Image (tube, rainbow, N blue to C red; front, side):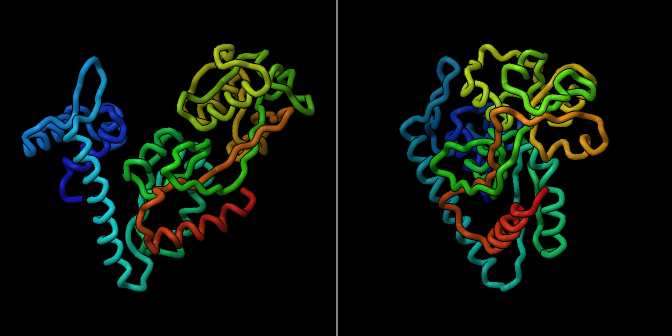
Length: 298
């Protein structure tokens, strides 16, 4: 998009936050503020009201936002329609994935797709589920792959595969010999968990709540990646619940012990994209390839 100011405005207007827009756009907050001021100077009117640490659209801002959405959609249609003139599968796609998926699922998938389609340029952004959904909403990425529920009805969500979650403990831990463990048995020990905004964290919190444990009663050591969680458990700091796909190496090497949960817990890996986004041939090829890959045992 030629007018960066409008793109920045669109992100702030969707999120109603200069800070969150800066994070999504990978800009500093002063740079975001400067772009908005430039646009307001051009229109000679305020687009946002900023009072009591709250951001809201003015009447002019609402009008600008409506037209910005139409402009981005038409621009995307124009760009992709031109690409469709060639029968080659080419172009560039920006994918976003939550941390578990980017570390344990995507490398093999994207490597194989890239080998079969060398003319498609792939870029990858990594964040937690909340961050990836925000990037899709703001057209920062073309396709998101996430591990948690997505409640935005404006986005198209397609289930890729189911993923089992299991309890992990240090080798030799008193729970290691059990055939299964309940939520209460897990939380009787120091619990290690992912950060707020993580799809894994949200699924586990909902699981505990469903079985009588309220959020405020869950005390955990928060860590920012699956690798950090596994490392803490291996070091004997506590126990955790993780994706089964994330610990296959550690289980084979005898570095951790895994116990099924009772009742079982699973969640879905899903593709997330804009519902109205213009269809691109390279994207359709990637989705078809990924759907087939999802059916394989990881």
